[in-house]
Image (tube, rainbow, N blue to C red; front, side):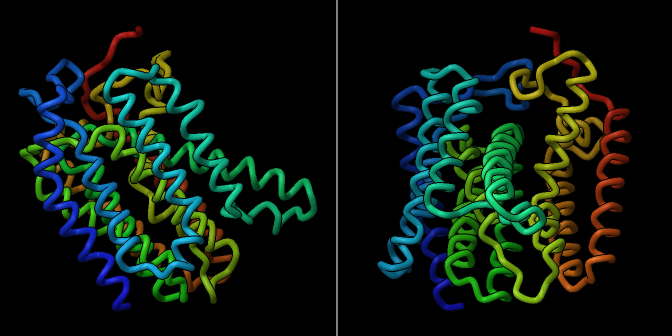
Length: 345
């Protein structure tokens, strides 16, 4: 517990303090996000805030973790560093946007697999070599999917950092309750770094995290979901709990994927103001209200996960089915909400 609190404090202070020099660096090298028809800001905003988040997490790990724990985390930090670097290069315009989705994220997922971090769901259900292969495929899909979901979630002041903070809070709670110190410390570090950055990123934002920060956070969220183990819960609850904790990026990605596909657009390569937060703004909540509503959804998902972790297999399956129906109904309702339609490229 004390290690987790220390990791949170170190990451919080590091991110809070380092964001200012990172902002100055972004302005010096011309890394700014310019206003545009698909943006919600009206003046150039410095990018590179993800560097402060990255530094906060890394410094927390170096400061509080034992050498043995650091050794266990090499694969995690290597994969996170890779996606963060790819994101920064994309922010700079040095990479085609498809490189991060079809190369950077899958390679980072393979690094996790090589370090022994993977899904165990299908191995448990099917067993044998086929189950292991399918689990490896599921791991890559999960890591790429969640990382990409956070990448496209960074479209409004304070949204991505706040959602990551809420999710990491619940990951830390679950890890603490189930005797997983490394997972709890990593989640606490992500929580601290995200909250520290929010000081400068909540509306009106003084700096954006950019794709480097969003992909870094998304990769770590996916990793926490893979590493989380529930001592007294059913195997069904073990796969449902991460889904509930990450309900906001999953819901938002499902919404834009279905909505854009129905309009003949490619979901991850056609950005626009048609996300859940944009629609909430258009319904009258305003930017802060829309972001806070999604924070509340994240809190609801995490709280539901805490309850579900005590359910029987039957009740967990029923809850999972009910949640899936609610998500799809929510997508159907949000599709009716006003949004700015983008043109086909």
